[in-house]
Every structure is written in C-alpha cells, then in structure tokens.
Image (cartoon, rainbow, N blue to C red; front, side):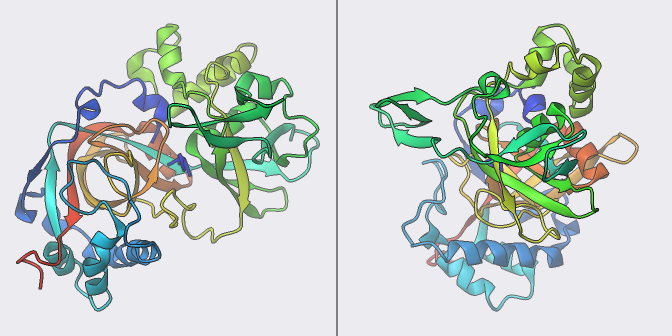
Length: 381
C-alpha cells in the first residue's frame, strides 16, 4: 500500500503535528500484560486469523530474512526468531493464553502518536470520456531503483547514460508521461487522484456498478510534502483545522489554485489493478491483506513486520468525540510520513465511517511492542 507506502496514516495531518518524542531513538521498558490498560477487555477470538496470517507469511521467508526493526530490540528482527512462536500457534485455540505465553511486552518510552488511513471509494471509468478525464497511471517502464555512490537506494530514470531524478508531480501533470499507454483508469477530478495517492490504494466505483481495486505500484522518488503543512504555512488553514475534509474543501473551493497547490507536493504514486478479494483490505507492504482496526503502518527501521503492538489512544466516535481505544494491532504496512519510535498509522477500512475516522485521527497515546520470546525463555513451554 503506502508502501504501501502504504503506502500504508494521514500524512498531511501528521506533518502538522508536534512529534518530538516520536523522532527520538527507540527506548523500551519491559512491562507485563497486567499493566496494559484494557487488556482484559480485548476481543481475543478475533486475533487468531490475523496471527495465523502473519505467521504464514513469516514462515515463507528464509530464517535469516530481516523483518526490520531497530538495533535496540532484543529479539524478533529476523524471520527465524518467530519459528517457535509460529509453530505453537498451529494448535492454539486460546489467543489470550498464546500471546501471553509467547510474547514479552515492552513499553515504548515517551509519547506515541497515531493517525489513520483508509481505502477511498472513488467514481471512475476504465475508458476516457465525459467527466472521466483524470488518468490513473500504472508504473512507468523507465522508473528504476539503483544504488547511489553512497550506498543508498535511489529512484529515478536513465537518460542518455545519466541517472536523473524522476519526473515530479508538476511535470507529470503537464504531460511528461503522455503517449506511453500507462493509463489504467480515469477519474472525475485531480483531487480524487491526489487523495488516492495519499492513501496508497483505493476502490474504484465503475459506471456499471462494479468495483475494482487500485493498489500501490511505486512512486517517483520525489520528496513527500504534507499539504496540510503547506496550507498552514501559507495561512490558508489554521493548524487546529487541518483534516482530510478541510484540505479537500480548500482545494475544491479554489479551482484556479488547486493544481499549483497539489504540485507543492512533488511526490507521485503509481498503481496497478488488484483483483484480490474486496472482502479484505489491500495488500500491505508485509505482503498480507490489511484488516480494518488490526493493521498499522509503522517505521520498519524501528518496528519489525508482523510485530503485535498494544495501542492505548483515542478514536473519534460517531458524534465526533474522542473515545478511548485500546487494542492489539499488527505491523503490516509502512507509510511515507510514518517515521520514528511510537509512530503508527491505523488502517480503518473503507466506506464513509472509515474515511471519517482516518481523517480525524491524530492522537497521542501509549504504545507497547510485543516481541516473540526466544524458545529458551523459561516462560515458554
């Protein structure tokens, strides 16, 4: 997704938030399950499918495969670290007992910060015509990733033997990709495309009533600039008023400035058609379908894929009021603006309420990382 990005948190809201703690190095303190607020009220029966989904994916990897994670983590950074816990899962019917036996909780020191992302539902056509004039582009053939002289991976294109940055949003809007046959769908509005790219995947509602999914298939390598931050800096929006709805509202209310404003973010996302089941979310960066309310995007350099996280925060309820939300989620995605310890982006699903929650979720809280116990741990059977 945001990748899966996504793509994989409401980046423009996060970009406006103060997150001093989340940019600090990872610091952990061992804790107990009794110290997790709301642990006894968790819906444990719903956890087994996600746990098994994660283990199935991990066990497809060679034992030495890195799942990510900071050096400070005592265990769980390689696929092989999960073999004992995943083997035990095969015969488990009691999720609470399983998690408490095979995982050790560590509280992330400092405040956590949470945002949300979702799968937008957008009117579209597979052919150009009438109101459908904004193309959704597939991945260009000349978009490549290569290793720079400093050893870092970079994205760009080769031009007469020289490696150059890939076209930015403004250049693509002005026709840099015309004539390559990359159009895989057509939308009614450039604003719809912009929000589809922010989320990293989405569902297209076709004129015949059917739906298809667009999934993330790469980005141009240009820096991501949160539009909410730009609008605040330009005194167009108050920082307290930044949300997905307010940003969309500003764009639609200023059609003469809309394109120039969106082009302040040079980052551009490409898509592919995903014919997977629409009963689940799009596939995240970890390679498993996302589950609403259980999947989060994290900074993979801090938190390994598959890791369970206990979240204590607040989510907006149907009346717009923040309500306590304490649940176990799983690191299954990454996001462009999801950086640092204690930072996570909750996948809220699809539909109007999922959009509402994602667009209004920017809350602090507590994060607890659950790492698999080594087989020799005396608390594991």
